[in-house]
Structures are given as structure tokens and as C-alpha cells.
Image (tube, rainbow, N blue to C red; front, side, top):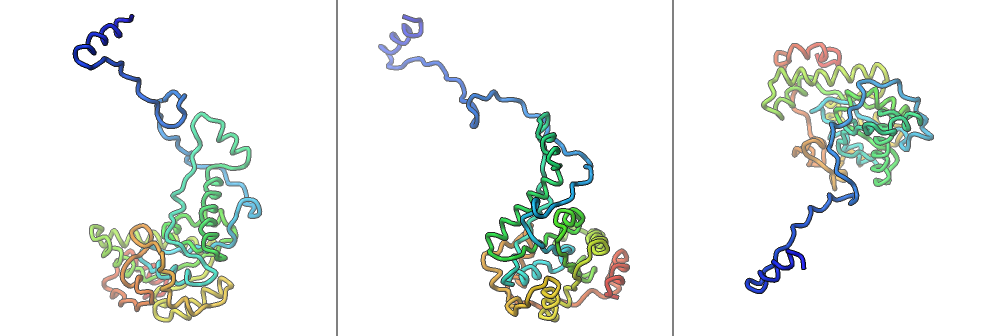
Length: 300
């Protein structure tokens, strides 16, 4: 009899207890035979890549003729996407922030070599992921074309144009000083000058994009003053029939995702009807940095 069994025989007779060996800790979930390995730093993608392979829509893309609204923050893009989403052939989801979806190759693996042999680098694989994500939403909606309106797309317009050569762009402008005022009010800890400088970056990116890819321009002030006329113009650009139901976009609110990071969520949006815009800032209230853009866009 082993020492442990002898000991347990005596202890059990007097106390009713026994000694047991502590079991080893169970392996982590997953492969039960795997030996845990220390985690190294997350693999980083290269700072720059070679020019991507030309996109073959028949092979590389599921979406056809997606629509991207290029705009600054606080410019009324949630109102516009709600109205477009009320069209029977347009699916306009909340802000998707697609360009934040990135692809990494595992370090010290043949994955990168294999993918590049297929002509697929980081950016090409990311574009496949973006396309599949949008196509999934479009199929779920049962409509014909997708509309994406994340303001950050203004800084990614070149990659978007490369990813979808048949993409169509709508440029939504608003009085630059009104945009800066709205953003400053929404985020009070940001100074008025900081807000002006930041929104100017969006607008300069929009100008660069329009010069390169073109598209349809509309102004938020015109959209709120005569929404039917502006929506007719967009429909002509998109080669769609205008639908009066776009004016009363309440149907788009059903199940809509609103809130921080998804788009505007104020009472004007939730009303389901177009509300008049408030007066623009007076000229002496406009930050000097915004004056050239105000002139270029016809606001002065």
C-alpha cells in the first residue's frame, strides 16, 4: 500500500476526510493538445504597398455602382441618407466606418507570400472585405444599390474609387462656418478654432476628390429649403425615378441605428420630416481659416 493510501486510511478512520492531489490546471479553450505560446507584438502592415492590381469587377466585386456621400461632419448627411434610404431602390445604412476594417498577415507564416501570389496584398484584401460587408447589407435590404455616408470617407476617397471603379459620388456641402459652429456646440471641449481647422480638412479633401472623380454636388441649405428639387437632382444623377415618399422619410427611421458613431440623433432627424435650417453665422463670426472655402463654395 502506498504512503498516501496508508495516510488516508488512518485519517479517514478518525476524521472522515482524505488527502487528494491537486489536479493540473486545464488547458485553455481551443486545441486541447496545443502548448501555450507567448504572444508577440501584433504584426504590422507595411507603411506603403506597391500599386494594387487593377480591379476586375466580374471577379473582385459583388456590388455594382455603389453610392458614396462625401461630406464633412455636422453637414446634414444623416438627413440625406434617411431620405435616400426611403427610395425603393436605395439602401442607406448607418455609418459603417469601413476603412477601419484592416487586414494583417500573420508574422512568420506563408500567408503573405501565398496571397501576393494571387495578386492580393493588404489593400486588395481589405477591399474584398469592404465589398462583401456592403453587399451583405444590400442583399438583406432587397434593394438595388447601396449608399454609404461615413464622413471619414472624405479622407479615403482615393481608395474607395480604386476599390469600386464604378462608384458614384455625391458631395454634400454646408456653409463652412455653420459646420464649425455645429461641431463646436456638439463637442464643447473643442475650441471654436479647433473645430474650424478640423472641418476645413474635410472640405479640402472633398475638393480634391471632386477634382479627381467628379460627381453630384448639393448644398444642405438647398436640401432643407426645397428638398423635392434637390432629391430630383440626385435621382437624375443616379438614373433613378424620383419618389415623393423620400420627402417623408419616416419609414427609414423604423429599425434605424442612430447615436454616437452612427450618425446624427437629434430630434430634428427623429421627426421624420425635413426641418428648416437655422440662419448661417454672420460674416464677422466666420473664422479666418474658413473664409476662402466660404468664397469658393459661394457662401460669401
